Image (cartoon, rainbow, N blue to C red):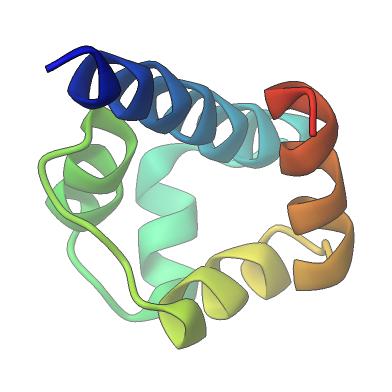
Length: 82
């Protein structure tokens, strides 16, 4: 079961990075969701870990925050200590 808690910790880092990305872009959840063409609850659910995104949705999230997917992944790897 220890592997499960590691994944939860890693996922928490990912969720924090998503939130940080949005805030660094100066966007509210409502503004980001409007750009994505989704309800505000979508961004809230993603940031709380209630909804997972596929790779293309993550790319859209990054693009809406004026960031590249490649830089997002590189930052995530750095945060995870990889």
